[in-house]
Each structure stands twice: as C-alpha cells, then as structure tokens.
Length: 249
Image 1: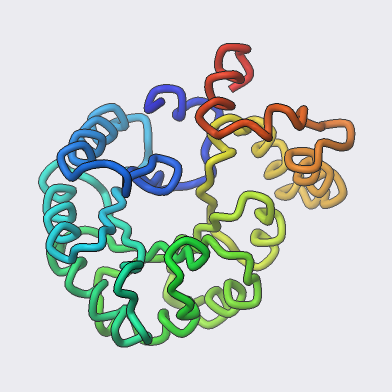
Image 2: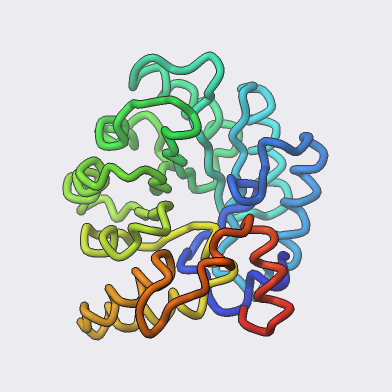
C-alpha cells in the first residue's frame, strides 16, 4: 500500500500515516511505530513530507508516538481529540494538544478535526483562535467535517498565518477548494487519484463545469466520467485492490 499510494497523486503535501483509513487507532503502539518507520523510509525522495498521526486516548501514548516520529525523521505530527473522556471546551482540547506537541518540539504540528468520529463538537474556528500562542509549532488543520461555514471561517480568519488547510471529506472537495482549502486528505484518492487530478486540473484552469462533472461522477456514478458504483460501494481496502489489479490506480 505504501508503494501504490505514491502513484497518481494524493492531493496532500503532507500525507498522513496511521490515520483513519490506515486504521491507526486499531493498531497497537508497536504496530503504529513499525508502520511509521516504513512510511518514512519508503517515502524518502518520493514524498514532499510524511506526517505521522500520533493521536491516542492516552496522553502518554500520544507523547511517546510523537517522540518516536521525531526520532525516525518524520516531517510532522497530527493529533485527533481524545474521544472517550472528551475535552469539554476549547481550553481542555488546547491543553491536550499542547502536551503532545511539546513531546516533539521540533516538528510541525497539525490538528485532525473529525467530530463525527470523536464526538468532540468544538468548532475548529474557535480552536484556531490564538492557538499559535499556546502551540508555537502549530502549522495547520485536517478538517474532516461537512460544516463548510466552520471551514470557511478557519480559512478567512487565519489568512496571514499561512496555515495548511487540508480537507478530509472527499465528496465535498470541490466546494472546499472554493472556500480556500490548500490540500486534501481522503481515502478515495488512493484508488481515484487520476480522476481527482482531472477535477483539480479543470478547477485550476477555471473550467468549473468540467470540475463539477468530475466531482459528481466520482461519487454519484453519473456523467461522462463516471466510476462504476459497484467500485465505490466496496470497502476502501477492497477497492484499492480492485483498481490496482485492473491497472487503473
């Protein structure tokens, strides 16, 4: 998977390792370490950067994974909110993130906002307000939520800070680009990279009608660029195997 993911573009300058698609939170700490080591090794001279997701329910484990990421030469770390005993407000969440970031003070730090899975409903826009004063290494956000108002406010209120705003809801990528996304991270790009590139190219040349057709065809199964719905209904891991075997990666 590490090798096939390099092919045909993932629209993310900072590919995340051990995230949602990689089922990082279902792995043991030793397994997460091994996966991170492989990505850093295999990604050298192939990827611009490798960012390791180090989020965990245990603060101590998150800190250990952050330290390990620094030791193996990763380019950054990302963290989700703890989702069992949840932070109740911005200050609680910031305090947790600050402790993890401090374990790898030389690495850029990214927050992974995915409230549908964590149950933490603190708005990203609220969290970002003044965050670099608490976490100097903070460099950006992976936003995996359908609340485009919150996302747009994140971008609008932090234009001067040059944060990375990586969007994580594949079905809304085109809308997020209009709102100011600087990149995207998602599961379908592993097996629909070429189609995503075509959409991005259309968007860059301001052919918005074609961009919309490419966006819709990837998920609605309609139009001249449609992907068979059967493929999209498979689990991501099965779909990756299917399109790779067919030479369509």
